[in-house]
Length: 179
Image (cartoon, rainbow, N blue to C red; front, side, top):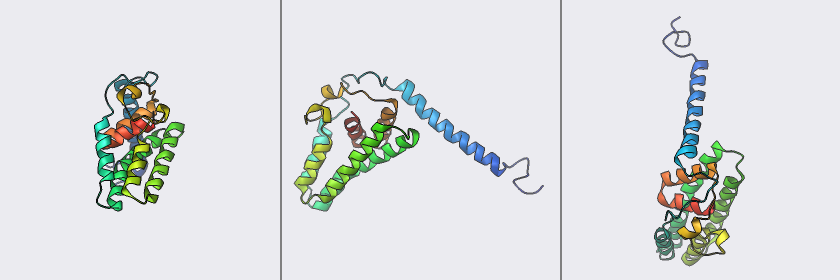
């Protein structure tokens, strides 16, 4: 009875696996409770909160257009999108059947491919500008008023919160593409 697996003081391998499963379930429940109680009801539109900072998006688009090289423009355009993709991946882990999160992931993948194919800094900036325009707004630039008409599911809210945890721009990008 000297091995850790048989010792009353050390957990067995089976018990360790059970504890890991319980901890994972607790993490999922914690995220669910945050989305269910601390965030707006997904069935209602967000109020005119001014959450979407047009100046931040415009400033990034200008930095992309004025980048000293094409590689730097691509890096600027892809950095917040990679973080947004990470947030979507985590949300998809929690909600593997969410159609809207999968659609947003595909949209980011298309965007990344378009940016990688771009041949000038201006073209990269244009692709970024297309990403941050609301599909439902007829191409109108983002605006808190337009964003107030968005309805988010619980899992979309979780993805958006994760995006904001990773950074302001990834959160804003997710607000836009999940709208």
